Image (cartoon, rainbow, N blue to C red; front, side):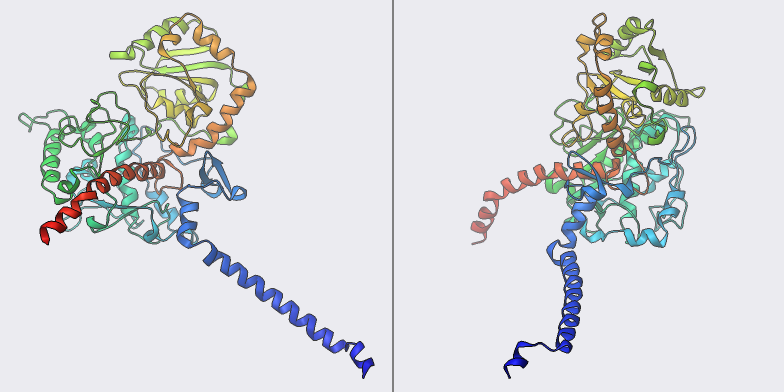
Length: 496
């Protein structure tokens, strides 16, 4: 009896090992499923991956100051249309409709920002592009089955923010469409966080602000603004908060000129505040959005390092400007004879855009000097060419500066210092190769944040604007909640 107890049969050991192995495999499968569905909820996981709110998962993402850019979403070469051609996203829509990419899309119901978009007639948006709707259809088909109207080329495109944001909202209605889960369109305004006004105001100004033969005293641009004011002021949604939860795009500095004062309580999407009084537009309530750059995006593989950029400082553009743009003229006379500086007049005519791109890609520093307004698309041309921007514009407001530290990839110089003899060149020549290379590397990381594209991608300009809106509306909500402290008590007392 004691001998049997002391010895363990080999058959028992075999059964024990087999059972243990089976349980080990089963537990691993269970743990994997549990961790994927229970420990981190799908909503939190979507927020982490799509809305760029964490610096975790470093093994699968490129990070910059808390903003996650999944490597799968960062392309070395971003498709680019020639500046002189219309900008059409139709081919990109077809590409995004593949079965593989459909499986990558997130659930639109879990978006962080719910947006109600007014169903304005085409004359306010795509009709300005020549698209004609129908009696029961105000919007083009953006699901890849139809042709999306192209935005005009030339310098029009630098203020095309209205176009990209509207397309993004329209595409959010299709569950299989591949795009970030930051913002989604909702049909009921009472369920929305913000209300979006789809008026292509920059295009309206660029194309329809002049009075033509059939028009007597008022331009189409002014007529549309007047119609928009009348429409919004009559809506219960506007009256609820006085328009504070509305988004109005006015990226061109002269757009919405007639209506801006009447609609000034809304959240504007602007290029800068150069032509706005502070009571109408300010950093507390409004969004500064990047220009759409006009030069091609430089592929990272073609981005030259310090020693292969022979030009020290580069500027090409209009030299004689109004208002505070006089500094360009002063700098021109100070720098025009420097041997390693390119400072010349330039325009988009005669392949001017391609020449500017080549010049920036061959330069260590690109000068971004105040002109008629504090900002210009030149800054964003420099960023996508990985040419370290030198910002000489004291009143400039920069996109997404609450999450991006521009001092890490730009040089800032006060205007009063820049016009001192030898100051600017001495400053730039004093920057070491290592310091420049550090900024150059960070430029390559942040450049995707300034890309407008359709479909949009996590962390691109469209997605960054929606994230900026999310950060702004918290103050609107707080103000409304503070007003409700005693409001509900008064209602209760009256009813009782």
